[in-house]
Image (cartoon, rainbow, N blue to C red; front, side, top):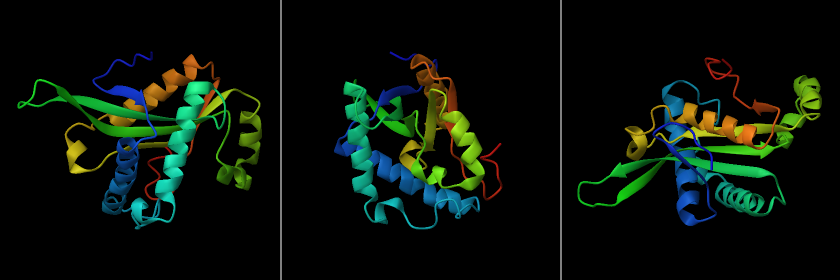
Length: 186
């Protein structure tokens, strides 16, 4: 079990309706946030839930992640969810609220990066190593997560780094949008 010292709890995403709904809704929540900070160019104005096949593709990735985690076979993708435990005054049982997610590939880049000529040298060098490719780290910008998400993205990256070390990876690569204020590249 991975032990990241924080108030966040990390787990593997499941190929079920609850995790699928969280991921789709969290992606949707980024669209107004990006518009508010002047970065609509990153993912555009259309909510992810309205994009053809996004939900089906996400469910397929969840299934692949679950299969790979359980068997070590298939597409080497992992999807993680960060949660906080909330104690409701009306119940003795705590409730877990998901606030962030990460999607990683083991030892492979997404195909769209391989078509980018300026990355050819870096990708060729990276593919000689054991590495993780952090393709998405995302916090939920919906109101239900607002008071719990502070620091979730950074902690998720720490968790992914710890996972990479546990798996004996030599490097961690990530994809980030270079437009807008260019703050993601920093």
